[in-house]
Image (cartoon, rainbow, N blue to C red; front, side):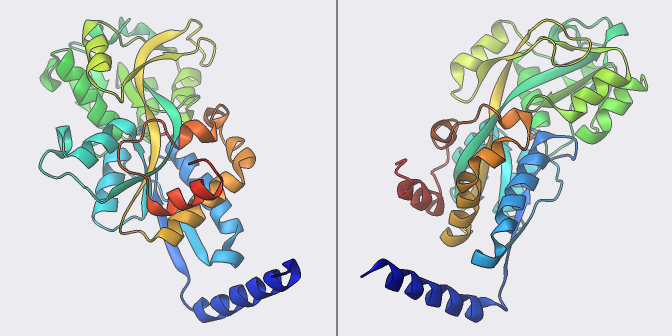
Length: 320
Ligand code: GLU
């Protein structure tokens, strides 16, 4: 078949499917996180790239703010969201039915790719007397909103460090978008956030009042890293935030992008294609994406099986 004939045939095919499906536009909802987080940028960026190609695939993408990782995984399981961003630890537990997901594992969960690293980050008021996670006893601490991955991971660190909620003089569950103002209004001593850097929320805390990032280390953290494949040592670079000039040690996970077998292959294929066909543009949409590589994104930090629609695209590109 010659090229011109092939492309006109393809053109006719595209035209006829467009006409046939003009009335049935598909909508894709991507769950993100708080508006000052990086997940929100991930979702908005993906949708921006998908929506640029709407004439070709008739898929309209939206990415509302949500409670975060665990809320996204639950909403995907309930069929309320097609896709979402989720921490690698919670992807693992949701697929395997462990930890918070014991007895409610989701074998339909599918991985698409991983995104940026997310260090577990502790930000404290400079006048709080807190110099590390081990100083949190009797302090006013934001442990993260229920449904956030931050909250889940905070509970894991607390259990490892034998710290209970009642050990705090105040336990608050503010959302990420609200916690920095509460810290700077002196209603809290410390906030926690498992998020990519630089993060808007932490920037807000660092410029609105005297605050700093404190380390989360010790034998308990070393044991978490040794025991679980999804935890790794992490460093928040000095100089990134006002008040924190030296590198700070902690541990972290990765942000990942997930969906379900209930989302059809063609939709997943188009979403993945929109990201990787425009990868240079995608990487420019947030500084936390600057070091991403295609190879790592499709292999690192994924514990649920890859979605068939994503595999189709990765094979086409010769990556698998
Ligand atoms: N990792 C956080 C969570 O799952 C969200 C971070 C962000 O929004 O960038 O709650």
